[in-house]
Image 1: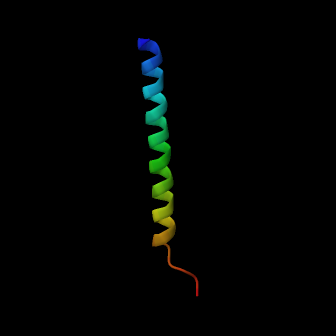
Image 2 (image 1 turned 90 degrees about the horizontal axis):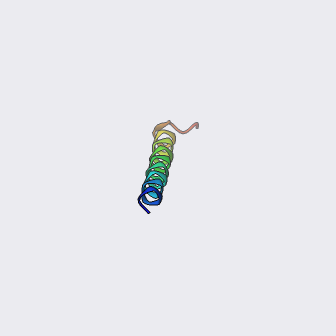
Length: 36
């Protein structure tokens, strides 16, 4: 049981990291000036 719990926690952490990366990418796009 302990091993399974640890694995689940690791997966959750990875998902959170992915979400953060996506947010950063979106912010960068917004900061870029729009071509006129």
